[in-house]
Structures are given as C-alpha cells and as structure tokens.
Length: 252
Image (tube, rainbow, N blue to C red):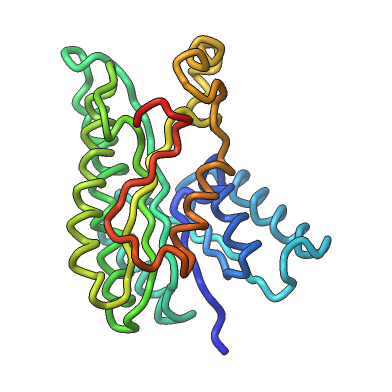
C-alpha cells in the first residue's frame, strides 16, 4: 500500500513545525517546505527522527526537506511537479507559510505591501494549482489554508496582512466548491494570537493581550495543529469551505 503524503509550507518553525509533527504522528510522510532558515528546518527534521527512535512516531514515517520560495511562481511549480512525479501524489496540503510587515498604511513602503501579498496570497495560486490538479486526477485530497483572525477583521497597521489573509479565505472558499465533487476538501484555519517567531515582537504585550482573550491565554502551535488534524480526518469529510477560528474567543 502507498503511504499517505503531506506537504507543509513554512513547515520548519512555529505553527508549521507543530503541524509537521502532528502529521508525522498521524503516520503521514511529511515534506517540510522552507525558504531560507535551513537550521530550523534541520532541527524539525531531527526532532521527527528522534521521536521515531523513541517510538513516539511510526518508524516507517519518512520526512524530507524541500527548499523553495513560495513567491516564485516558476520555481514553485517546477519543484512541486518534480516532487509529485518522483515520489507520488500528495494527500494533504497545508498552506502555512506567511510573513508580517506591519506599518500604518499612509507610510507603508510599496515593497512591504508587495512582499506580504506575494507570500501570503499570490502563493496560494502558485502552490495549490499543481497540487490541486494532481488531487483532481486521483479524486481525493485535503487542503487546509492557514489564514488569520486579521483576515476576518480589521487590525491597525496590518492593511497588507489583513488584505492577504482575507484574500486567501475567499480563494479557499471558491476552490472548495470547485473541488468538492472530486472528494477534495478545502478549508481554512484562522489563528488568533499564537506564540511563534512571527509574534515575537508582541511578547511584551502578551499580558495585556491576554485580557482581551476570553480564554485568558495566548495560543500555541499545537492548538492550531489540532484543528488541522480534525480537518484532514475522515470525520471532517462533510466540511467544505469553512473557516475554523482558533483564537480563544477573541473573535466569534
């Protein structure tokens, strides 16, 4: 029997790392995409291998790194097509990679607008196009898009980030109804404040932020991974184009 395979973009750190570990624990062969932080990617790979040694993860699980810039259309398509041709189709795609470049809109540099849109939104097309085509042919698959609370409501200083994350919610909903008849589920997870490298600059504000969150804590990568775990399971087979908020009640 062929093994289940999953690709996680931005899978080496933060939320992506938690999702990669969750997939490995669920007996998926995991492809961890990263752009430049090879050290973190290797550490995540080594952690999975150590858990295999400790029998926390099935020893049959295979994991490898795949370096490419998701904002580069030609390279992304070429690398993904080569991966599928060489190693077989993917059962799960988790679109997690993203960046923040916050500033007030009237003084926001054009490059900060463009880079956030390119990596957080345009990459949806770049990555999902070849993978969804493969899933379409095999008549099955799960696609989970990691958006953000910022894609559901306005946040000051984040017009670029809000726009990109709202855009991928719309794109995911449109794709979801296209692919559902082929037994492919597309859904969205929208995290709130999660303790990761991306929110490192907000750490000094965590004590105040907790007061705004009904559950009174900052979320973890595992909180998000748990939602993804449900959406890729058979239990979520009748869920199509939905947005699951993982925000502790910050936005309901």
